[in-house]
Amino acid sequence: MRKKEAVLFLILVLPAGDVSAAVPPDAIKSDVVTIWLQQQHDFVNPYSRSALAVHFQLAEGWHFYASEKTAPCGINLTLRPSASGVINFSAPIFPKPRLYFDKSLGKKLEVFSNSFTVYLPFAVVDVKPFVAESIESVKIAVEGAVCSGFQCRVPNFDQLNTEVKIAIDEAMGEPKFTLPQPVRQNKPVLLAGQAGYSILFALGLAFLAGLSLNIMPCVWPVLPVVVMRLIGQAKQGRKKSVVMGLLFCLGILLFFACLAAANIILQLFYGTVLQWGDQFRSPVFVTAMALLLVVLALFMFDVFTITVPSAVTAKAGSGKGFAGAVGMGFLAAILSTPCSFAILAAAFAWAQAQPLPLGTFAIMVIGLGMAAPYAVLTSLPGLLARLPKPGRWMEIFKQAVGFILLFIAAWLILALPQQRRAGVLYFALVVAFCLWMWAGWVDYSTKLFRKFVVRIIAVALAFAAGLYLLTPPVELITWRQYDAGLIKTAVEHRRPVLIKFTADWCISCSLVEKTVYSRKDIAELIKQKSVLAVKADTTTRDNPATVALRDVYNEPGVPVTMLFLPGQKEPIRWRDKTFGNELKKLLQQLPSK
Image 1 (cartoon, rainbow, N blue to C red):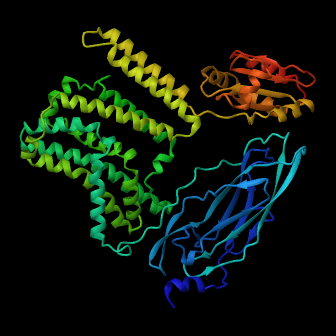
Image 2 (cartoon, helix red, strand yellow):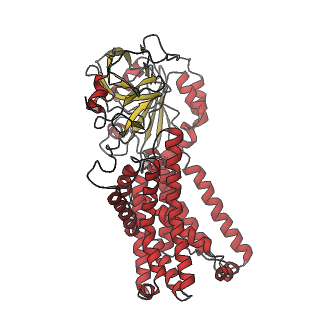
Image 3 (tube, one colour):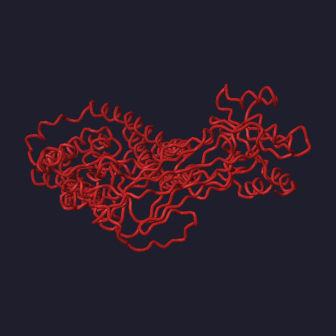
């Protein structure tokens, strides 16, 4: 019997240890796996989103296969939820798998092991009319092979059952868990030789991948500086030219050495791999890269210049400038990341499917490919002499690169979560203004005290704007989308209703959000008093809230906040941005839930 078939047909019933955990009594339990269910909200409102969390706890040494394409005979972990037409499930969100070397097949496979959770997002897409509360039954079928190093089982798991309560007037409250960002499932990767080419050929492709990074637009900001430095080095003699060029290459290799070290740590200590592109799942990293590109674009436009003190430049000839060459190479490698996803993702996928030493070497080969052109240019003075002389063309090239960098920065900002985009965009404008202050409001003839004051103000302004604009907004209040029928029903049942008329383009509306609805005391009162909080979006002309603002409530524009109190036909209205204390006082007078 072949090894691949043996994995499936060796279905043995052997004890594999006990799994002990605090789990509900209706969980699915066996000697190797325990599975139980958790709801994100106790109640779900109509036309709202929520999720189910399916928790798995496996005995040590056991795992589920993660990928259908690499699992033996395609028996990977699968969850199949079923419900009525009221609930519509989205694609499951699986955790990041780890790599497991399957000795019987002789290759690494993606698996889920130990304790992990699969999330099942859903939306309530339809409700029964005139029914305040309903219950929908949900069943989840769990399928897959549970395997260890010497056997596999294909259990007939029982279905997980739960009931989702749908309530019109009940607040959903704080979620019991937060949905993670979906993990991009890698395509199956093969060991060298299985794809029809040798290790040497694969390493050659890795070298070409690194070589291609030099033509990425993100790297272009440092190219004029590098070219100027190379031309200057050619005049200082071959020895100085070679040393500075090799130090620039060392900076590039240092960046890829950091990536290789991170990959080693993740594989040895966490049982996972470094996926190229994971850094873009971090809003902090994406924000930092976008702002860096904006700053470099301003440098290309000569809004500011980077000057080195004369005391430092005087020592550059004695070797003190070597650190700058290393740093320039490291920066060039970092700047390649936003533009190199497709190339490096494929190269990293192959490298990390290999044994650890070979994978580490392959990552460093990518760095060698990027550094090679600079090593060649600085080692051959004849090639340096043929480089074009500085002139007007270099200024035009710099300014053209500046526009490309702004385009890439805008693309990165659009990749951020929606609630962060506006803050990062505004902060980028503030940074540009502060850099203009730093360099444009003073010059070499400006008195030292005035220069100090202007630049301190620029730094303070940027710091304060960063604290205000880059702080992730916290949604303390569960807002319902505008629905005239829902508001009418709540008012008829003497339930207080708070309507916030807003728009994405309204700056005053964002100030209302900061000064009123970001207050914890007001959010707590809205929850305690069972106030129906409605967000009326008037961003576009055809939104129902826009029509109601004009035709029903006769208001000329936003921001407007209305509070319907029980027993009163007309709402209390606020059109300013500092009504928080008035709203709090009225909420305190309402009876508790």
